[in-house]
Length: 401
Image 1 (spheres, rainbow, N blue to C red):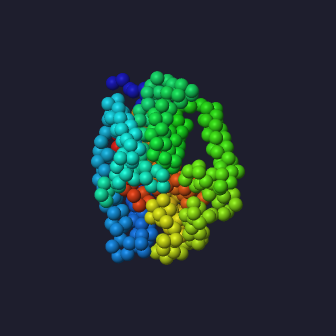
Image 2: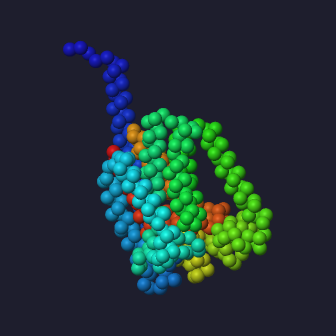
Image 3: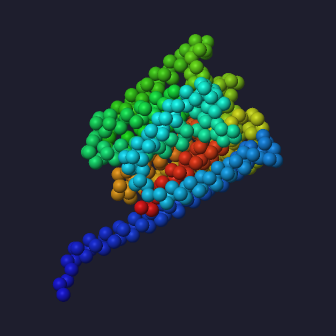
């Protein structure tokens, strides 16, 4: 019998070894992500209980609702982990997702005028649909639609060999449309989140470094100019410029002069007092005082302040490490994915979760204006939690396949 070439045999052994290593990495990644989500979920439930117990007494409706949201999210996570992710890459599915987003997001300003009880205006924004006791934030749920649409378009760019300017211009149409629809809702925070998700996905594509530098320079210059204009103008001159501009003015006063007024800057000022009082080890679970009506929305947008107050620097460091680990685990999964669509889905979802986390904590410590962006998994709210768990279900399906 003819003996097999030693080089071919060695190559087969290396391929088999790489296959086993890849399988091992997938299993570790799955266990680690699941472990991180479980830890964050437990911390979230504990934190919501602590932050809301004073306001709702023994009934503790926030806790009960939060647990219900987790139950629904867990079911959806399981369901989407079983659905083959490649189905989202089909043209008809993308057309359906885009049409649905267009109709619902575009129809909300109209609904706000004719049915204000169903689509109410909150601080000038019209981002919620309310039917009885059920509230849904479509722009939050459609973030996963947005990631799927961009991933599908970037996959086409990969197959067509598009690079640099052509890749950017061919992929920017969808973000522009979504930006226009969200601007109609007057929701600056959600608009910024969508924009940063798109930029992250583009930067992780085949765009050359010089293009990334140019885009970053243009964005930073524009933001700096806007911030400088708002800061140099007096409060009186900006009085008729809208709620969001006043928020930015208050943010700049706090960041530069450490002055937080009792109107637009009140939440951030109280948030910093809470986090600062936590010091290294925190004041202890349940012992925080900001929840006693000092810090509004402490169970939603400012849940980080409540956690920082009670668990201190050590607790905050733990949360940062958990989200950083989740981000890297999901993003690194893209290197093991042989499918362009799956690769960009992983990149988009990792960016979506981590950027939302960064925006939330940056607001809580006064590094960004108040945008009303919840912390992933930790904050009270069904729309955000459900979207996060659907995204993680898709991550698990990609990892499995």
